[in-house]
Length: 133
Image 1 (cartoon, one colour):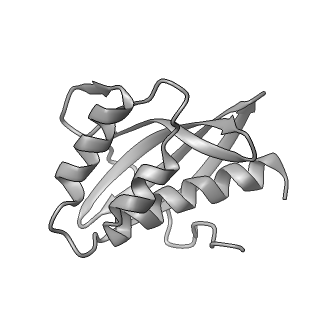
Image 2 (cartoon, one colour):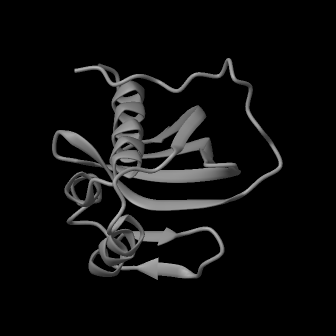
Image 3 (cartoon, rainbow, N blue to C red):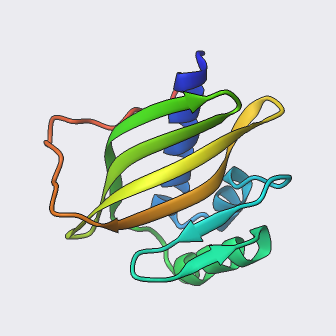
């Protein structure tokens, strides 16, 4: 699998964890040995692994699933870092997201996620990648 495919796979793992409200999978996709941060829509920046994981716990706690999907993911590789820009649909809300990954040993891990509302709605034909094992 190419680096680009691996990054897209990691991006899909992130959204699968979110959709399933799977806190263990969410914690697993985030980097352990690199600085991490998140900016949830309408909120301030959260920095540091413990604080980021806590913020996801607050969002996912008590949920069985989220109606979320992503579309139109594009990857920009920068050595051992990668930036993914994609569109999210969460319920009726449309957002644009930036997900930054770093190579950690043999896999890509998330170091930053930020999403914000957008009036751009990607085409229904713009399918997200599918999990490949």
